Image (tube, rainbow, N blue to C red; front, side, top):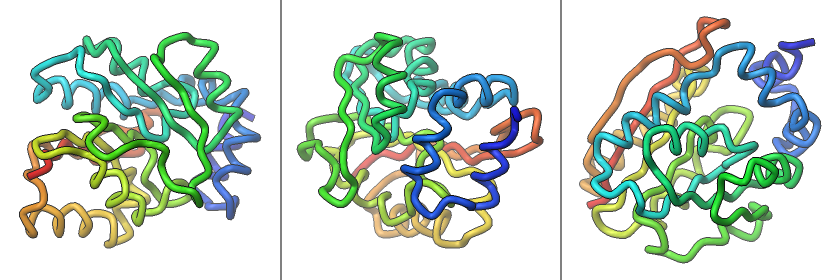
Length: 203
């Protein structure tokens, strides 16, 4: 039972991510804790290296149940807002009382954030096969002001799809961003899965 939803994610059994996360919400934290999901803390530590002001408000895009915010708080960040497409996940995050603001949104209507509203945005375990498509990358990145930081991850299943890593390479090559950090490391320890963690700065 513990691995049921992880199996479904990686087998891409859900055509609509909202269906997956609606059903998974109640057991999400426990399942990932049991499988030792460490991408959030890896990403938070990487971001902390480059963020000069830990009190700067952060947008946690695809915040889910708040696992990313918990990692960010443990690294000294103190002001975090979250948005997600799953109302069920949002409600669990709300119960933790770790976000300044939380909002559920309809992806067909766009991200409910003004351009330049946040100088730091995270998308940890969000942009991936079976979740947010790579097309969302530009939508999130474009919200940042000049010199804004974007910390995100791609799991190994997504790295097998060329569009994911190529999107980052293209963004850097076109001098839209500077790559500050890129590291392949553990993602879900008990499944021996890896993820690539990135921090880029908008130019």
